[in-house]
Length: 423
Image (cartoon, helix red, strand yellow):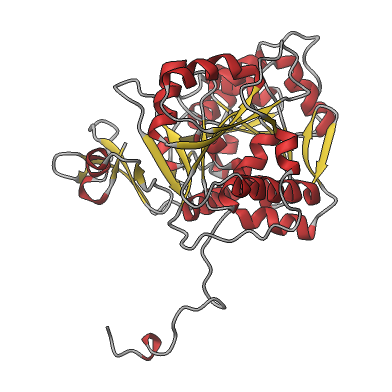
C-alpha cells in the first residue's frame, strides 16, 4: 500500500462502482426508447418495453421453477425472439446460458447436457427429435420447456416437456426485480467447442467480457442510432458474437431469421432497411449466387462482418458491387467471437477493386476492447519477427478472453500458459 493521498479514503462503494453487465443495455433501451421496435420476426413486431417485460417474466418463471445463481439453462433454439429473451432473462436471475449448436448429433448434445449439469432446457420443436434422443442418453433430467415458433414452416416435433414457452412466461411476475451480478467476473454464458479432437470443452464467459465485446462490436461496426441487424449468424455460435447484447446499446432492431436462404435475406433487407449482418464467407457466396428473381435492391449500404477463412478476392469485390461493405474479423469461441479486425485505412480507398479486396482479406489488429494480440513463439514465449515469414502462434490477452474451460483445470492451465491465451 502506498502513502499516496489517492489511496486513502477513496474506497469503492455502490455509488461509484457497479459490476458491468450487458443486461443494463436492454434495461436502458426499454426506459429511453420503449416504443421502438426491438424485434421483427415474420409478422411480429415487439417493442423494447415488451422485450424487457418478457425477459423479466422469463427470469421470474425460471426462479419460480427452482433455478438459481450458477445453474445452467440450456437452449436448443433457432434465431428467434425466444433466443433473444434468453440472452437477458437467464443472467437476470443469476443463471448461466448455454446455447446448444442445432447442427450437432444426440451423443454430443447428451455429453453437453451432462457436463453443463443442465437444470432447465428450452427446446424449439423443430429440434425435438434430436433432443429426445439426447435426453435418452444423458443422465441430466432438466425441466423442459417447449417452444413453438409460428414462423417455422416444417412439421412440428413432439412436445417433450409439460409446459409451452408462452405458458411458462405467464407464470412469471411482471414486477420481478432482477439483480446485477455480485461480481462482473460471474459467469454469464457457457459455449462448447466443436469437440473435433476429443470431448467438447465448455468455454465460460463472464459479464464483464460480454459487456465489453458488445460495446466493441458497436464501435467496430459503426453502429450508430438504431441499427437494423439481420440474424444470418447463428446465435448459438459464441452467443452470436455478443450481438444479442450489442443491438440494445443503441436501441436497434433484431430481424430474426431461422434459415439462411438468399431469397428471404434479400426480402428482409429490403423490407427492414438492414444496416448490419454477420456470417461466414459461405453466406456471402449464397447472396452473390442468388437468382435474379431472388435479389432485391438494397435501400442502404449494409455492413457485413465475416470471419473464418479469408474470403476470395472475387467474393469481396462482388459484395462491394452488390452494395455491401465487408469487414473481416478473426477470433474464436474462447475470445467471445471477434477479437481481431481488419481495420480499414482511408488511403486504401484509392486502390483499385482488386487491390482493395486483397487488403480486406487480410487479418488483423486487436479489437478495441482487447488488451493485446501477438504472434508468439510458444517455446520461448517471445514475439516472432514481423517479417511475413516467421511462424508463430496467435495469442490473446485481455478482458474479452474466457474465464476458462468448465471443470477442466488442466486444459485451462495449458491454454493460459505464460499469461497468454494460446489459440
